[in-house]
Length: 247
Image 1 (cartoon, rainbow, N blue to C red):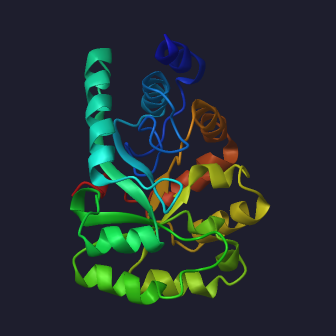
Image 2 (image 1 turned 45 degrees about the horizontal axis):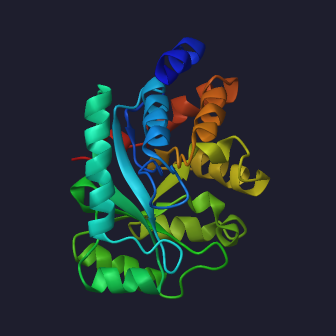
Protein backbone atom coordinates (compact mmCIF):
# COMPACT_ATOMS: atom_id res chain seq x y z
CA UNK A 1 0.00 0.00 0.00
CA UNK A 2 2.76 2.45 0.99
CA UNK A 3 4.65 1.95 -2.24
CA UNK A 4 1.58 2.60 -4.41
CA UNK A 5 0.71 5.78 -2.53
CA UNK A 6 4.29 7.00 -2.68
CA UNK A 7 4.60 6.38 -6.41
CA UNK A 8 1.26 7.99 -7.27
CA UNK A 9 2.17 11.09 -5.29
CA UNK A 10 5.66 11.64 -6.67
CA UNK A 11 6.09 9.32 -9.57
CA UNK A 12 7.86 11.97 -11.64
CA UNK A 13 10.79 12.21 -9.22
CA UNK A 14 13.86 10.09 -9.98
CA UNK A 15 17.52 10.21 -9.10
CA UNK A 16 20.06 9.97 -11.91
CA UNK A 17 21.70 6.92 -10.31
CA UNK A 18 20.34 3.61 -9.01
CA UNK A 19 22.54 2.76 -5.99
CA UNK A 20 22.23 4.23 -2.50
CA UNK A 21 25.58 3.93 -0.71
CA UNK A 22 24.54 5.27 2.70
CA UNK A 23 21.35 4.53 4.65
CA UNK A 24 20.12 3.19 7.96
CA UNK A 25 17.42 0.80 6.79
CA UNK A 26 18.57 -2.39 8.53
CA UNK A 27 16.04 -2.84 11.35
CA UNK A 28 16.79 -2.67 15.05
CA UNK A 29 20.55 -2.20 14.98
CA UNK A 30 20.97 1.58 15.34
CA UNK A 31 18.79 4.71 15.50
CA UNK A 32 17.50 4.18 11.97
CA UNK A 33 14.68 1.73 11.20
CA UNK A 34 13.22 0.17 14.34
CA UNK A 35 11.14 -2.56 12.72
CA UNK A 36 10.89 -4.74 9.64
CA UNK A 37 7.77 -2.84 8.59
CA UNK A 38 9.65 0.47 8.69
CA UNK A 39 12.52 -1.04 6.71
CA UNK A 40 10.18 -2.21 3.96
CA UNK A 41 8.55 1.23 3.80
CA UNK A 42 11.96 2.87 3.49
CA UNK A 43 12.95 0.48 0.71
CA UNK A 44 9.69 1.29 -1.08
CA UNK A 45 10.64 4.95 -0.82
CA UNK A 46 14.07 4.18 -2.29
CA UNK A 47 12.38 2.34 -5.15
CA UNK A 48 10.10 5.31 -5.81
CA UNK A 49 13.21 7.49 -6.22
CA UNK A 50 14.66 5.13 -8.81
CA UNK A 51 16.97 3.21 -6.47
CA UNK A 52 17.13 -0.56 -6.97
CA UNK A 53 20.46 -1.31 -5.28
CA UNK A 54 20.90 -0.42 -1.62
CA UNK A 55 24.05 -0.72 0.45
CA UNK A 56 22.99 -1.01 4.09
CA UNK A 57 25.38 1.02 6.24
CA UNK A 58 24.31 0.75 9.87
CA UNK A 59 26.32 2.57 12.51
CA UNK A 60 29.27 0.84 14.13
CA UNK A 61 30.21 3.10 17.00
CA UNK A 62 31.83 2.65 20.41
CA UNK A 63 29.38 2.30 23.32
CA UNK A 64 26.22 3.37 21.45
CA UNK A 65 26.13 0.90 18.55
CA UNK A 66 28.83 -1.73 18.97
CA UNK A 67 27.52 -3.83 16.12
CA UNK A 68 29.49 -6.84 14.98
CA UNK A 69 29.76 -8.63 11.66
CA UNK A 70 27.57 -11.38 13.12
CA UNK A 71 24.82 -9.12 14.48
CA UNK A 72 24.57 -7.14 11.25
CA UNK A 73 24.59 -10.28 9.13
CA UNK A 74 21.73 -11.76 11.17
CA UNK A 75 19.58 -8.63 10.66
CA UNK A 76 20.56 -8.51 7.00
CA UNK A 77 19.43 -12.07 6.27
CA UNK A 78 16.08 -11.44 7.94
CA UNK A 79 15.59 -8.28 5.88
CA UNK A 80 16.44 -10.11 2.66
CA UNK A 81 13.82 -12.74 3.45
CA UNK A 82 11.23 -10.03 4.16
CA UNK A 83 12.05 -8.26 0.88
CA UNK A 84 11.60 -11.53 -1.01
CA UNK A 85 8.29 -12.23 0.74
CA UNK A 86 7.14 -8.69 -0.05
CA UNK A 87 7.94 -9.16 -3.74
CA UNK A 88 10.14 -6.07 -3.78
CA UNK A 89 12.68 -6.10 -6.62
CA UNK A 90 15.67 -4.68 -4.76
CA UNK A 91 19.32 -5.77 -4.59
CA UNK A 92 20.77 -5.45 -1.10
CA UNK A 93 24.39 -5.32 0.05
CA UNK A 94 25.60 -5.43 3.65
CA UNK A 95 28.21 -2.99 4.90
CA UNK A 96 28.44 -0.42 7.71
CA UNK A 97 29.22 3.18 8.57
CA UNK A 98 32.29 3.03 10.81
CA UNK A 99 32.91 5.79 13.32
CA UNK A 100 36.69 6.07 13.62
CA UNK A 101 37.04 5.45 17.35
CA UNK A 102 38.46 2.87 19.76
CA UNK A 103 35.87 0.27 18.79
CA UNK A 104 36.73 0.70 15.14
CA UNK A 105 40.41 0.24 15.99
CA UNK A 106 39.61 -3.18 17.48
CA UNK A 107 37.41 -4.27 14.58
CA UNK A 108 39.95 -3.09 12.02
CA UNK A 109 42.86 -4.81 13.80
CA UNK A 110 40.86 -8.06 13.96
CA UNK A 111 39.99 -7.81 10.24
CA UNK A 112 36.28 -7.77 11.08
CA UNK A 113 35.21 -4.96 8.75
CA UNK A 114 32.25 -5.36 6.40
CA UNK A 115 33.34 -3.41 3.32
CA UNK A 116 31.11 -2.58 0.41
CA UNK A 117 31.70 -4.37 -2.90
CA UNK A 118 35.05 -3.35 -4.33
CA UNK A 119 36.45 -3.15 -0.77
CA UNK A 120 35.05 0.35 -0.24
CA UNK A 121 34.67 1.34 3.43
CA UNK A 122 32.44 4.17 4.67
CA UNK A 123 34.16 6.07 7.49
CA UNK A 124 32.64 8.63 9.84
CA UNK A 125 34.62 11.24 11.75
CA UNK A 126 33.70 12.69 15.12
CA UNK A 127 31.55 15.82 14.83
CA UNK A 128 33.70 17.56 17.47
CA UNK A 129 37.15 17.20 15.96
CA UNK A 130 39.05 15.35 13.27
CA UNK A 131 40.71 12.07 14.20
CA UNK A 132 44.28 12.94 15.19
CA UNK A 133 45.90 10.24 13.05
CA UNK A 134 43.40 10.40 10.19
CA UNK A 135 46.00 10.73 7.45
CA UNK A 136 47.98 7.76 8.74
CA UNK A 137 44.85 5.61 9.06
CA UNK A 138 43.65 6.43 5.55
CA UNK A 139 47.09 5.64 4.13
CA UNK A 140 47.29 2.35 6.05
CA UNK A 141 43.85 1.29 4.84
CA UNK A 142 44.68 2.15 1.25
CA UNK A 143 47.90 0.14 1.47
CA UNK A 144 45.80 -2.83 2.62
CA UNK A 145 43.58 -2.47 -0.43
CA UNK A 146 40.62 -0.64 1.07
CA UNK A 147 38.99 2.23 -0.81
CA UNK A 148 38.17 4.81 1.83
CA UNK A 149 35.02 6.93 1.63
CA UNK A 150 34.47 9.75 4.12
CA UNK A 151 30.80 9.97 5.09
CA UNK A 152 29.12 13.41 4.86
CA UNK A 153 32.26 15.60 5.10
CA UNK A 154 30.03 18.66 4.68
CA UNK A 155 28.63 18.05 8.17
CA UNK A 156 31.93 18.40 10.04
CA UNK A 157 32.16 22.08 11.08
CA UNK A 158 35.95 22.01 11.37
CA UNK A 159 36.15 21.26 7.64
CA UNK A 160 33.50 23.82 6.72
CA UNK A 161 35.70 26.48 8.31
CA UNK A 162 38.95 25.12 6.81
CA UNK A 163 38.05 24.05 3.30
CA UNK A 164 41.64 23.58 2.18
CA UNK A 165 41.51 20.39 4.24
CA UNK A 166 38.87 19.00 1.89
CA UNK A 167 41.30 19.28 -0.99
CA UNK A 168 44.14 17.74 1.02
CA UNK A 169 42.08 14.68 1.97
CA UNK A 170 40.66 14.24 -1.51
CA UNK A 171 44.09 14.55 -3.13
CA UNK A 172 45.35 11.90 -0.69
CA UNK A 173 42.81 9.41 -2.01
CA UNK A 174 39.84 9.75 0.35
CA UNK A 175 36.58 9.83 -1.57
CA UNK A 176 33.68 12.00 -0.39
CA UNK A 177 30.05 10.94 0.13
CA UNK A 178 27.67 13.86 0.57
CA UNK A 179 24.11 13.59 1.92
CA UNK A 180 21.30 14.82 -0.32
CA UNK A 181 19.62 15.95 2.91
CA UNK A 182 22.46 18.44 3.39
CA UNK A 183 21.47 20.30 0.22
CA UNK A 184 17.97 20.78 1.68
CA UNK A 185 19.29 22.60 4.74
CA UNK A 186 18.19 19.75 7.01
CA UNK A 187 21.53 19.80 8.87
CA UNK A 188 21.82 23.59 8.91
CA UNK A 189 23.11 26.31 6.63
CA UNK A 190 26.80 25.60 7.28
CA UNK A 191 26.45 22.00 6.08
CA UNK A 192 24.36 23.15 3.10
CA UNK A 193 26.95 25.76 2.09
CA UNK A 194 29.75 23.21 2.34
CA UNK A 195 27.80 20.65 0.29
CA UNK A 196 27.25 23.23 -2.46
CA UNK A 197 30.94 24.23 -2.31
CA UNK A 198 32.02 20.60 -2.67
CA UNK A 199 29.68 20.22 -5.65
CA UNK A 200 30.97 23.39 -7.28
CA UNK A 201 34.55 22.19 -6.91
CA UNK A 202 33.92 18.69 -8.25
CA UNK A 203 34.72 16.97 -4.95
CA UNK A 204 31.60 14.85 -4.54
CA UNK A 205 32.23 11.21 -5.46
CA UNK A 206 29.09 9.65 -4.00
CA UNK A 207 25.66 10.82 -2.88
CA UNK A 208 23.74 9.12 -0.09
CA UNK A 209 20.27 9.39 1.36
CA UNK A 210 21.56 8.75 4.92
CA UNK A 211 17.91 7.82 5.39
CA UNK A 212 16.94 6.96 8.96
CA UNK A 213 13.16 7.07 8.50
CA UNK A 214 10.43 7.69 5.94
CA UNK A 215 10.31 11.39 6.87
CA UNK A 216 13.79 11.73 5.41
CA UNK A 217 12.56 10.17 2.16
CA UNK A 218 9.78 12.74 1.83
CA UNK A 219 12.20 15.62 2.45
CA UNK A 220 14.56 14.27 -0.22
CA UNK A 221 11.78 13.76 -2.76
CA UNK A 222 10.45 17.27 -2.22
CA UNK A 223 13.94 18.59 -2.90
CA UNK A 224 14.33 16.46 -6.03
CA UNK A 225 11.38 18.37 -7.48
CA UNK A 226 13.14 21.72 -7.04
CA UNK A 227 14.79 23.82 -9.73
CA UNK A 228 17.98 23.91 -7.65
CA UNK A 229 18.31 20.11 -7.71
CA UNK A 230 17.63 19.88 -11.43
CA UNK A 231 20.48 22.30 -12.10
CA UNK A 232 22.78 20.79 -9.48
CA UNK A 233 22.21 17.22 -10.63
CA UNK A 234 23.40 18.06 -14.16
CA UNK A 235 26.76 19.11 -12.70
CA UNK A 236 26.96 16.16 -10.31
CA UNK A 237 26.42 13.54 -13.01
CA UNK A 238 30.01 13.98 -14.17
CA UNK A 239 31.56 13.20 -10.75
CA UNK A 240 29.11 10.96 -8.85
CA UNK A 241 30.00 7.26 -9.12
CA UNK A 242 27.28 5.55 -7.08
CA UNK A 243 26.49 2.97 -9.74
CA UNK A 244 30.14 1.93 -9.97
CA UNK A 245 30.51 1.15 -6.26
CA UNK A 246 29.77 -2.53 -6.87
CA UNK A 247 32.61 -2.95 -9.38
